[in-house]
Length: 345
Image 1 (tube, one colour):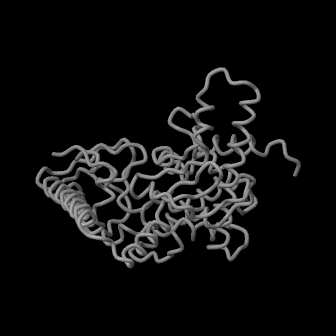
Image 2: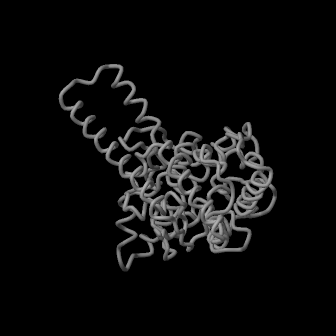
Image 3: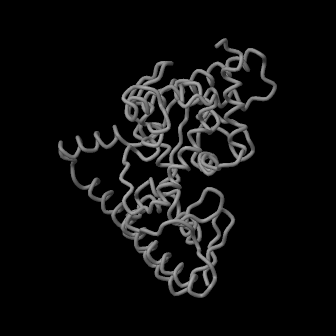
């Protein structure tokens, strides 16, 4: 039997990748169809486990054709953190063969692309396509609230009131964190991080750090709110229905989910919405979204670094739809009061 431990914030595919020593880049290059084949084998192992009275490996749905649908992630193939999956060696051997072969194919394709680039000129059409891809690829929000792609290409200047383009870019980066385990949202400057690491800071230096941090996290939070409002709420308030649209990328096609799974998904989204809606008025405003984004900037030792990293987002995402009071509630409320607690209503 192959024993596969599921860590905090991991899904089945991530746990299998860790077992095989695949990097985040390796996983990102593996096709969705390959993961569907892998999950078909996991489902096969699960069926055998149930038949042998060993219990189910996972809870929720098992529609492998729906694996790329974000709406199904919280209900399908779900394994609790700390659980160990046991998969028969013969089945796991097939899984290993699929993933390692896919890794080799991706490496070969990368090498071939590099060779082609060295030996041929890029056509005007190819250059245009590359520029378009760069402009829409995921990246980071820099110290002044500017979203930059990995190339880096300037996409949008962000005013304090926020910009929908920056919000969309940040939302895409958060999605990438969940799907590939890569990406970060960096909303502080290199100078800020150097000063933050300095011992024995003066009161003036502390004030400088607070000013840049608070300004840029508000730019980020306001941008997220503006993007969600304009895209999923027709420019109005972000209520629970608009938030659910946002959570599922606007694709409310829930085919493949049972009525029970759809109900579970709706409940999960409502819990997440209520957690961010600090004042409980039924809508998420700029302050509440900013406090939530601020709360994502805590590492496993509850330190803030001015960068939302994939591993930190995983930890928060796993607590977002928890029906019980948890550490994320404490962080969101702390951040809200830190930013707005002294303001007059």
